[in-house]
Image (cartoon, rainbow, N blue to C red; front, side, top):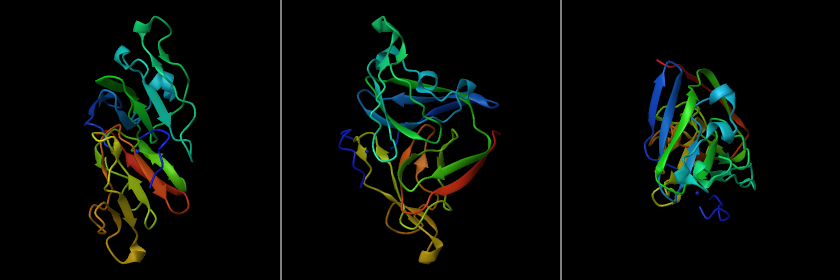
Length: 226
């Protein structure tokens, strides 16, 4: 199990809206008041600048919202805070922090509002690498899809999803079953191999926690805007 006592927390956000024209667009993610949301950056922000001061912009309603980032073995001790224009000082995050797409983070909201990601849709051959141990993981592209796919995983790897409504990790943990086990290859969240071979369904802007029992897992996702 994941130990997140320090956050007093442990995916599924409300459905996101995606708008795009060719490769440029935006993704609206609804934020609920006083909730931890497990999110990801689904676009390439302006200039390819993934610093939160450029890529994650909130409204005045989110004064004192915080971002929590996983640092490989524990939560990052750097916790940026948002300050809106209504406070009369500098607007934005008080601490810079880089969060690329394909990486998850927690956003502790303060009010009901909308987070809008703006940027380009990643295209072509998109590279991922899931390190050994615990890491956050997300789809690099803004599409609703089962992820990461039936060919990605080691025997008994786990994926943990966030239950936004109940503010805890979902009790249905995803487990990977490889070909050597003699059954259907892929991910299951019911204890039976092959329940859903491609993994949990993620909306644009969703993230998960991945527990990798072996070596790093490199894989490639090919994506083109239609």
